[in-house]
Each structure stands twice: as structure tokens, then as C-alpha cells.
Amino acid sequence: MDAGHTTTVGRKTAALRETLSVFNERDFEDLALQASLICRTPIGAVLILEDGRPLFKSVVACPPIDLAPFLTLCAEAIGSAEVFELRDSAIWNGSGIVFLAGAPLFDENRHSIGAICVFDREKRILSPDQRRAVSALAHQMMERVQLYWDATEAIALLDEAKSVESVSSTPIKNLQDLMDDLPTVAYVKNEQEHVVYGNSLMFAASGLKAEEMLNKTNQELWGEDGRQMSENDRQVLAEKRMIVFEEKTHEKDERHWMSLKFPVPGDNGKNLVAGISFDITKFKRHEHEMEEYRQRLERSLQRLQRLSSTDPLTQLGNRAAFDKALRRAFAESVSDNSPLSLLLLDIDRFKRINDTFGHGLGDEVLRRLGRFIERNVRTGDLAARWGGEEFTLLLPNVNEQEALLFAERLRQGIEQAEWPGCRVTASFGISFRTSDTSSPEELFKSADAALYRAKQAGRNRVAS
Image (tube, rainbow, N blue to C red; front, side):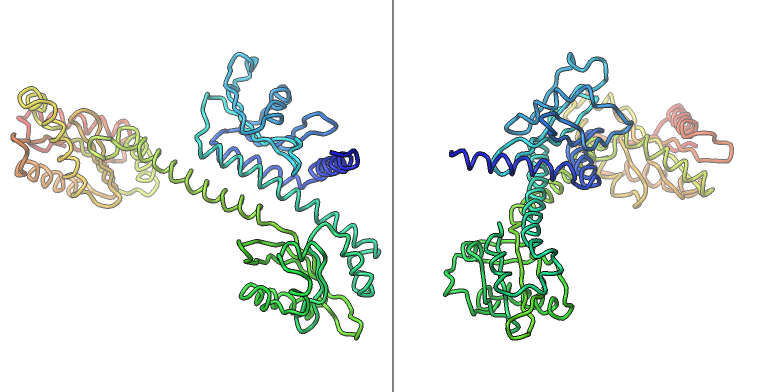
């Protein structure tokens, strides 16, 4: 590599760092938040190199935390070639932080710019989807920064005509001379939507020679994509101002462009449309990848939530899910002064079934009872396996009489159902929230006491 190229690369990397240093603060906060949501950590941060030193541009944390002591560790993420993870509690100096992961930020020449980092107070390992998603987030950020820099450089060159607005009074030949030096696609079209000028980058991007492109219309060049371009060009001429559009072309592959278009006077006194377009295909691809990863992570989270709240044998809710639902239903019942009933169901002499017929048949009884209960509860009710052979049913907006009738129907249904190789019955205990019921725990204890009375009275019955 020659010295001139090295100097140019160095200047561009320095300029990119400068761009990052003045990047919108809200953008950094959004990136830190997205990273923490992707990785499901309580802390997300964005840091960049300024004068060779890493500095945090944004920290999103609940509760707030001073991450300054971890800058040296974060520098390892900046220097890493890929997503970096660190799990070593010996180095956190009693802070409570035991996990760090970071996705490095590189410019187009693979020079380090900074990193997007996440921290946690619990040890963890990022899933493959989380690693890909946070990496895509870093790429997306750098595409935005690169785009911002290219646009800044292009507009700076146009500012040789004093300002972007004064371009409108610049003779078309002078404008074309300026566009020849732009670092991105540039073009001019007339009122009939014919391309009358394109710089070398435009021909390179399209894969067409000048004679194949000049004096052709948008639709002749780009088909259906050209129809939208024509609408955009007409809007610029009608409103006589610079407008930014997002446009697409399909040469070999779909490409996305951010186009800045503005009117300029032609030699015949009629306005032309001049434009500079930035290739944002990579940015859109990373945006699409991010959305795919987000959806996959969301589906994974939903599966984990279902698994964490579901009893694997009966597919009913588990004890944790029931406890949470009971607290919520109790609070709503008190707030609305609405009825709330709680049923406990226990399979009679279940140990005898296991001892006589084996645990395999006992498990099948539990599975079938789970399906039987699920078929008979209403939407809004919650059925759960409390543990062993005991089940709970939470019945919001069900009063005492309705709950007793419902429990009796379940009892008779269980008694009359066909079971694999054995007879199955169940006992029920019911409680109802009253103005004297002080807590969810008291409601449960009342149902448990009623279940005990049903057992003592001979089993296979309902007690309240």
C-alpha cells in the first residue's frame, strides 16, 4: 500500500471517528437499549475511541451504574475481531458485574472505531441468535455512520457553490463538474425524465455504458422501479426544493438508495432534476437481519416463557404460573369487588395407583386428567398442576354457587370417565373470596382446609 493511500485511509478513519463523536446522542442511547434488549441484560453501552482512548457515549442501565472502571476491559471488545464475551468474576472488583459482551465497530477499512457492549450481574452465555443480532446491530450502526460521512462529504463538495440552496442557480456545466468529484452516484435528468448526465460512479453502479444510459427514461432503465423515481422527480420539480427519497433498483440484485434530489436551471430556462444517491443496501440488509433476529428471539422468549410456566407432564400451568395468576386475580377481585373462587383437586389414593400399576400408568392418568380439566375450564380460568397428584383451578368472576356446581360436574366426569386399567376419583376443596379474606394465601389455605375435610369425609366429594 502506498503512503498516499495510507494517509487517505487515516484521514477517513479520523473523519469517521469525528462523525461518531458528534452523532446524535439519542442514536447512541437507542443502540445501547437495543443491545441490552437483544441480549436480555440490564445494562447496554456504546463506546468509541477518541484520541486513542475508549469513552462511553451512552450507558443504559437500571439501576444506574458507573462503568468507568470497566473501560480497560471494554477495550478488549474494541480490539476483538468478532463478538467478545468475558465471564470471570475475579476481575470485577466487587461491583456485582460478572458478564461483559461486546460487538466491535469497524470502518470500511476494518479500523477499530468503538464497540457496542452489554453487562450483566448474572453469568450468562449469549445464544447464537443473540451474537448474530448484536453483530448485525454493530454493522447497521457503522453503515449509518458511513452513509452520514459520505453524505457530509458530498454536500461539502456541493457547498463549493456556497450552499446547497445556491446550487439552484449554478450553471449546469459547473454543477456537472462538481458532481464528477462526488464520492457517490450523481446524475441530472430533464423534464421528460431522460438522464442527461451521470458521473462515472453512476455508470459503474448500473453496469451500463454512458451511451446505454444517457437519454433514456427512468422506466426504460429501471422498469417498475423507475415509475416511483419519476414520481419523485416530478415532486421535486413541482415543489422546487431538495427532497430526500428512499428508492430501489433491480439490476442483478435488489439495491436500496437514499437519494437527495433538487431542481437546477437548464440551458433552455426549464428546470432539471439533479440528484446524488447513496447505496444503503447493506444498511437495509442489516436492518432486515435485525428484524429477523428480533422475531426469532421473541419467539424463543415466548417458548421459554411457556416452558417456565407450563407443567411438562400435563401441559397445564405450573405452580409458579398459578401463584402469579392468583396474586393478580385476587388484586383484581378486590379492586372490582368481583367474585373469585379457588378449587383444589386431589386424585384419591394416587399412591396406590402408582404402587399397583407402576409410575408409567400413574403418569398417563395425570396426563389424561390434565386434558380433561383443560377441556372443561373456561377462557380466563387457570388450571395448574400444583404438585404430585394435586391440581388447582382459579375461577375469576365465579360465585360460590357456580363454583360448587362446576366442581360437582368435574367430580362426576372424573368418576365416570374411562381410565387406563384402573378406577380414578378425585376430592375437591373450594374457597371463595369474601370481604374478610385478607390475602391470596388465606384464600388458598381455605381451599386446602376444605380439601382436607373432603378427604376426611370419605373422598370422591366436594367440600367448601
